[in-house]
Length: 276
Length: 155
Image (cartoon, rainbow over all chains, first blue to last red; front, side):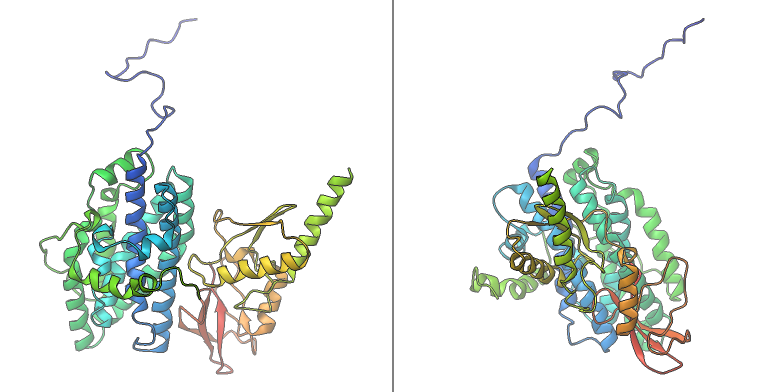
């Protein structure tokens, strides 16, 4: 019986099967940073939404926003608790949420933007939840089972946020002259913060290389397509291209974040370790 | 053999204790009806949250601790298990019946789209708000009897 012909291996490969080879582990610092990004996005948007509690245009909307805030703060608790565990310095989710300063936050600029009017709030929610849904869908396959199970748990809730926000973008965009103007303005305000969601820096790339994080650039086209569908459904034109604003993942933030933290952190910093 | 039998008895007794712990938001349901008890072993109970941010999660853990302590199971540990994520499919038949009797429409089985009013049974119903009084419920209205009601959302 003739033996199989020898296989020509590409230069630099061992022939031992690259898929079976051990994958590099990310350093503790990088994994910690990656988890902070995930947790801080959810924490800051959850805090923003909870500002509406008792102030939304109707009781149904009030309930929606409060419930979305709860979901997001739940995600933040899980990601930041895990970040603290990875860091190994005895900090838990609460310590990370309430005892870090603004430069140590790793959230994107989009989530820290002020609520503005209801249309601006929904524009922000829609742009973020649409992105987070695609992110968590993929993060549920993370090689780190702790991250995968948080994403798999949360993605079902995020799908709800995405639907709800998209419905409001359509309803306001396709509503009265005033609601349309407000939605156009809201989208226009938030548009420059979208490119940051798809930024890949060294830490994101390392997380992807280790099979732990998500290559966000890979779902950019899909994201843009989803945006176009909803914008068309709202009878609107996509906002004009704007100069992107980047830097949140490196701790560069807008002035708005400091004000948000001042309110969020005041109590636990003024009365440390108090229980209720 | 004796030890094994005792362990089995303990597991059964712990299940009975957990069946006596009501869900704090929907007290007609026990946490067993709700399907959030994932595992019971002689030294360990595993619970899973319904929604990631559900504030009841902490209350439930405290209530389970108190019930176990009162029944003499101080040494039983309470763990949280996230995976596989909880879905409404974990709610027992008994749980569904109790929900309906309490005035909450139970989550729809897969493929089912018609929501029946838990008050009058009519199917002429509409959604008012996707979010209701708790993360797990949506607010609905019956067009036949004009009463609002909660729907336990499919999740």
